[in-house]
Image 1 (tube, rainbow, N blue to C red):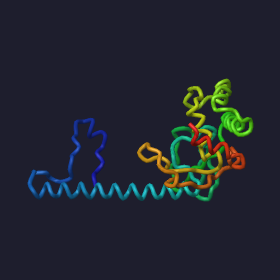
Image 2 (cartoon, helix red, strand yellow):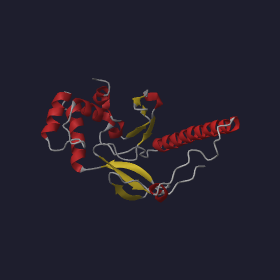
Image 3 (cartoon, rainbow, N blue to C red):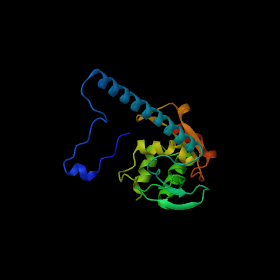
Length: 208
């Protein structure tokens, strides 16, 4: 295992060794170096598989595994028995391995905006262009601070998380994978949008 080099050593001109054994460019040395690199690569691959499997298992249990909370949601830190601890702000993460993160309804204005978008689409039967215009007339914009667009609205309407489900593993190397490869679990919060009104919302996910 590689040793951690103190920061002070780097600042004082110390060098980080590239290998942990002497490299005299001999056949034996080169073979040993290739073997160690292969072992390190295989260890990294196995560790990645174990980590992915563990995250998928937790996601199937409804625990949030990724980055920032969706628009209208907040991240709640809970203990091993599910007891709530605190709302996590952007950039904050749990520091205890037994703690978990779940999603809960967030800022009331954002929750109201999400509900309005779904109501306009499923009940008032407004077009997405009309809904975008209505949302942009309000002061509640996406967290990027940029105006609502057709693409942003489509992502909101097609998100499983607002229906009380949590889909994990949707992207591999930033590419959307087939839905049957997702890990979908029941989220541990009340749906912001009832499933009974989901017929037109489902079509929104494929309508361009």
